[in-house]
Image (cartoon, rainbow over all chains, first blue to last red; front, top):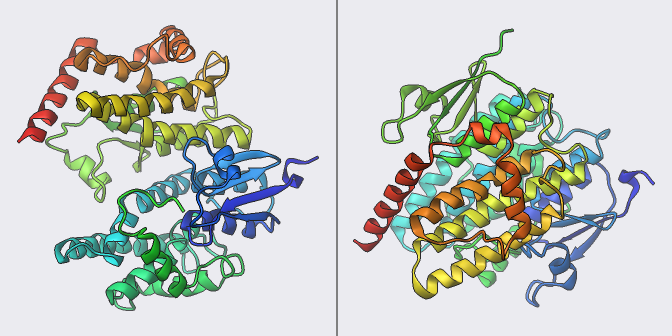
Amino acid sequence: MERSDEKVKVVGTWSSQFVMRARIALNIKSVSYEFHQERLWEGKSELLLRSNPAQKKVPVLIHGGKPICESFNIVEYVDEVWSSAPSILPSDPKERATARFLAAYLDEKWFPSMRTVGYPQGEDARKAAIAQLEKGLVLLEEAFVNYSKGKSFFGGDQIGYLDIAFGSYLGWLRVAEKMSEIKLLSEAKTPRLLQWADSFSSHAAVKDVMPDTEKLADFGVRAKILKATATPKL
Amino acid sequence: MAEEVKLLGMWAISYNRRVERALKLKGIPYEYIEEDLSNKSNLLLQLNPVHKKILVLVHNGKPIVGSLVILEYIDETWKTNPLLPQDPYERAIARFWAKFIDEKIQPTARSANLAEGEEREKAVEECCEQLKMLENELKGKSFFGGDAIGYLDIAALVIAFWFEVVRDVVGLDLVTEKRFPSLCRWIGKLQDVDVVNQCRPPKEKHVNYIRAGYEATKAAASN
């Protein structure tokens, strides 16, 4: 059997931006998969613990029985296995390097500030977090102008790696905007990103996996995810 | 076009050595520029204005930042002696463990080294659990890359030598023969690999540097 014909399963949750990345990648490649939704408040499933014993986190892609963990790993794996379908990563090594670097920056430096904005602990912390987020958004607006070359996505005509990396955060970004009553994406400061956010959210590969803002905000309150200092697990 | 490769780095940083080993494995000539951590050069700030990180690879004037990102860039640009496996699943595994080393093993080891008493015991236990997973990854192979060193060996070398240097400073021996026979065997085999040895900083200089760093951290923590 061809590798690309083997059965695909995704272990994840509807709320996780990391899980979203895996699902968008599979959708771009038109790969059918079984989605195993973790029961959010009931502890981790046997399947999850067995397939990701090192971190016990979602998402896990299980392909032909073999588990692949970490959202960006999964995206790259999907891109490499289903290589004839639209490419997710850019073909130029320098652009790939920048995309990977920016994606890591989003997870490591940028998103933690989002948590503070959405569920702040003190006004000073909130202001510092907003500044950090806006700094990142300026970077991303610039990156968008450079990479899109006038088209709709970071990937050009198609959704690419950076679209997935940043787009998966739109749910939480909208929650942060709602909770803090500020506009992070705006016509004044990030006109291209504002437009892109709509195009991305309504894309066929994305719309069914983009969480509803209200639902996510409630989830955030219940899980106190944005308050926690640890990386979100679910 | 003539290739121009520069590496802006700092001798004591283990990520520095990752990149140098990759460049040497591929036989890529490069110019090494030593950066002063306390006084970052204009060149560095110009190339890496947002993040100002010390380690930058400059290829024909274009900067690439982040040691693991740089390793992948090197592998994609110069095809001799591939660093990453060809198979997508094996690649995903290698990438996962490299990230695990940076995000889990290293920080936990650092905590273990800096902590005392019960806190240290807890951190040691956690670090050993993480190292055990890496030990299992070796699965009787000579190297993570199989018969020759590859991407994950280069990323994991920090465990081989930085850990050893820190043990000399702090007295905490994490990677023992008893706990991790496969990892110790791997470290032994690494000693015979040219590019590994060519990039090791002088032991005493390294020990002194790490010791100064730990002492400064401890002093700051107790103030």
